[in-house]
Image (cartoon, rainbow, N blue to C red):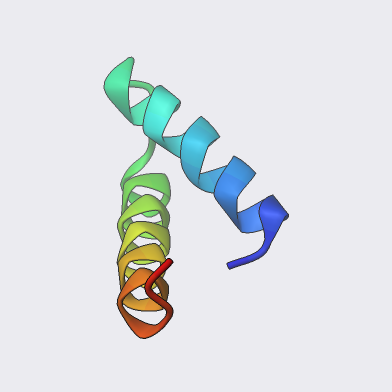
Length: 45
């Protein structure tokens, strides 16, 4: 997961928490979080 994707995920999560995210942004946030989880499983630290 790239740094840009991590930043996007954090900002989308903040918008979502404030109730400002659009449905499209919520979906994008969920996709990014899923991607992050998959990558964590693939490469345990």
